[in-house]
Length: 85
Image (cartoon, rainbow, N blue to C red):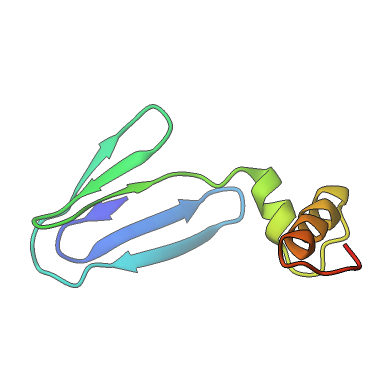
């Protein structure tokens, strides 16, 4: 949901939660629905809001022992030259 000059409100019906994103300028902000995202257009800026895929959340969550997370950490250590990788 969007309220001009105040901000956007993200409503999660399943979790019954509301989060807000406040705008810094008093200019109108428009939301344009795309196939896989939402484009946010303001007076002097434009941005794209898109969902994060669940696999990326699993990879980057703190303390995760998921196989893909361990592989990602090993690759990161290898790129840094760690001998244990």
